[in-house]
Image (cartoon, rainbow, N blue to C red; front, side):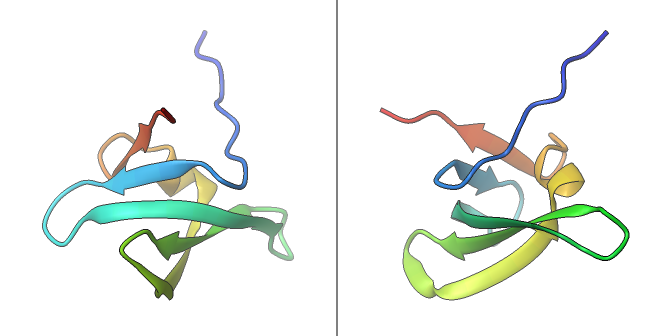
Length: 69
């Protein structure tokens, strides 16, 4: 059985594929149906924001977690 990872504010993820980059989680919110979404900002351009579902963020096809340190 796989454990679900928790996404929290301050974590950094690398978007895989063309135009990827590093993204930092700045907020976690739930929509009206209870689905969690992460608001993220691009590390090299903090004015660039995006909101994606936590399920997509945890999908290894799209993002990988970057360990601190």
